[in-house]
Image (tube, rainbow, N blue to C red; front, top):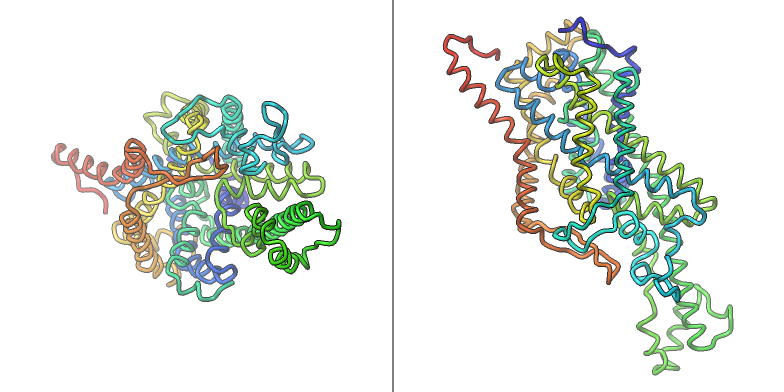
Length: 555
């Protein structure tokens, strides 16, 4: 089994592959949002604690399992116990779901990158209306950046029920994104604030969740990467390095993001003040330059008391400009990546250069994570003798990319963004928590912690410290169970699931209930991966009962 298995050229290559996989878009668009929501710098306290008690131990566990078993996720867990093959299958299913929609983000990044060479940037100004007598009404209601995202990029429908037609430009960008991923795969393993928020349990829950998903635990990618290591590789050191670099990147991204938030908030606040000043100057025939930001409130009070009738007519048009309100606006996900950042970029000097650099960075982050996701699918498939006997690795890789790309075209429909949100919100959360919980219990209590400890010592020549054993055997499983209970209770208490739909007439998002068939898809996404674990175990048990005389499974 081991003699034909390819190996990393050196340990540094393996570390870079893990970093490229772990450091992804979540570091840029999720972690800064959580910092803003839960007290700024004080959010680092629960985050760093969760890194120590959850992130590092579970990352080390997966790397150690992959390096010890030297197989992909399915084969590794089957080696521990035939009844646990479903854990690997569940990981492959979740990775398949993730790959289907994740590369759409890279397609959008390609789309914005191609438009970044225009002067002016196409999202910096509103287009003219059909009569060319003014600006487009939808763009004026929203903003130029929101209009370019929702209308020009997504051409979004008013609800998930209105599927609309395929958008050929994003579809071509998706094909390009998958072509880039496939070409990279062919290279193989050789290239690949407020302290009171600490009392808020949701701050700790979100810190744990961010650590969990940012490191990419449970997908099988880390097991796949580690399976190509030399048995003597020091995966403990590498787990610590990858964890620290991943968290450092998140913190650095937050510093940059908050700088952009500040720039955007200040610019919008000053623009708002200038519009109010211009409105009052023209309405009351004031001298140019008389009304300034410093005396605006004083003059407004004077005009309201001196000219009440005229001021009451103008009052509905006066916007309430607040710098604090601008700074308090918290956005995550695609809204942060493709609206907030682009709004800041359009106001910078040499905006085309910054736009190209920014979207090139997004592509590097996205493609790096995609290679890890596809490795989680391809490694178990290429390890399977039944498949690899008939198809070479290139053909298997091509088929996986082709299937994912074909399914991914759903996300380029006019209602595609709504389906993207469904996959992003529900395809992995509960499934990954369950997968990693079973992984931890399997290593500690099925395979045996002492047995696994002796295996690691035989491989690396190093003894396992008490820290790792306590985390694996007790703290980490209890923490995952707590997260599972939180998410289950949160789903139950939420009631009818809802989504944000774009209302073109208002130029903003409105809340709507998911239709019945969308709820059915959500249930199917969750069940199709989680049910792999008990169903495969049950199937293995039945087959063993039918084959009389077979020895009991290894435990």
